[in-house]
Length: 475
Image 1: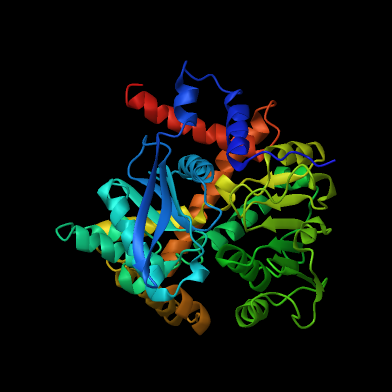
Image 2: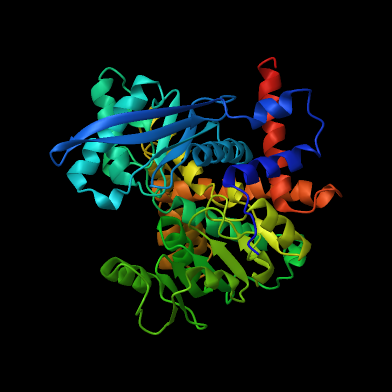
């Protein structure tokens, strides 16, 4: 007997309603925060391959308690209005949780990007940008898209250029989208941002003994067995950083064509190259292959990172999940039913609205950079170096004057004297953001006897901040 699965949108709304039940919101305010403000459907034609092809796109604005609104644009044949609205809602809650001053939005185009040549995809993207611009759904001051599934730096550059051509007098036009190439107004660290944020989220989890105790996990990240589902941009960077910088073992990776496993750990860069060359994970040297991709989710491991699409952990397989900690690198990978089942089993879930917030956080940094027209560190980097050099020189002078006979190592001096680059500043800001957001969740989780999970705590923190914004607006 098959189990009826809850839709992504229903899962988000159920999780929101559950968290709101612990709060004392003003009459009608819960509904105002929950509902999506508007969704626009655009249909447009582009002449390609000797005929006109019609495409359908969506842009949903969930909440304008903060402006501009922010959210990615995905290219996929599976894009639906319900999916876009659910993702827009998550963006609202995510931005609020990590204290990024945006409302939530999301967009999508029903298209398989692999079915079109690059110049064709560019023509489609530019026309889509035109349709969004006509409706004020792309603007540095109102609505700022970003990359998502099926899109990347290339598409964002096309959109930014198309917007600038439509608005030649807008000096801040580059800020109409984020996730652009570094040479086109982007920011260092944006490509890695979501995966890096997943790593920082795990680091912060391991700094909290109460959280580790709840998950039944001991020690540090080093040596932990990790399963990653989806080796796209997010999954790749998270797996790479956790394995090469933290000495964790990526024992399995699941992709479209199956999964590969090695209890001693997989080399993520080699696997990524193998996928690029062959189109899948099959025949990756030194690993066991299975065609049953989602079966990898059920492997025994310390940390499970679903980093692909929504709904992969659901009522059908939740009882077979063999991990103590799930880190939701994707949006909505755990359905509402699965969430309830896993909580009863004592599995701790680091929720998507927190775990994958690295992307929107660094997008915020990029947007600020575009509005200020100055890269981070340009004003202060050399001054930092000069000040540090003054201190180093004084310490070495005192040592010589007093005959102490010690000197600072060249390695220390090189690291200490070098001022922070834009990438280092971006990573610092992201780390600080992820730490602060986790601490706000943990405080609710550990001090409210009625709240027994991080997801509910995250929603409570987010909803409370949104409600404060609405009250300040007079609602």
